[in-house]
Image 1: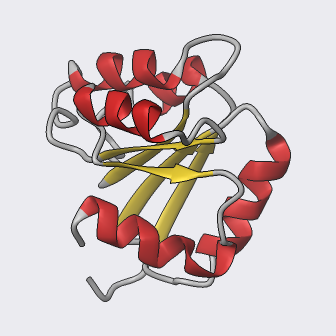
Image 2 (image 1 turned 135 degrees about the vertical axis):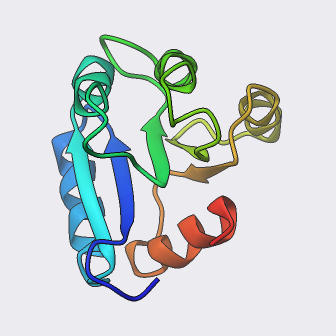
Length: 129
């Protein structure tokens, strides 16, 4: 992947400060086409038409409208998103919780607070690219 924007990533989190940190961390890589959503409904609207498809989706677990697992389930039923890796980004990082997220089909979990300097590398390892 070498062209600008050839790595589309969707980050969904109701915390605007965390979205800002993710934007700052990932904009250093010109290959990333980052889209941000403040909740599940907004994320589903972003992928409703097939003009843009994420290669990976990062989801906060606890959000006011839809939980991360609910968003993942809804997106998995959308054409073209069934095989996309989903990574949960959460402060709830006990091993039992991480195991539960993986059992739901998550590719991995990034525990908050995370290191913004290694975020891109961590996403790549968990998503397999």
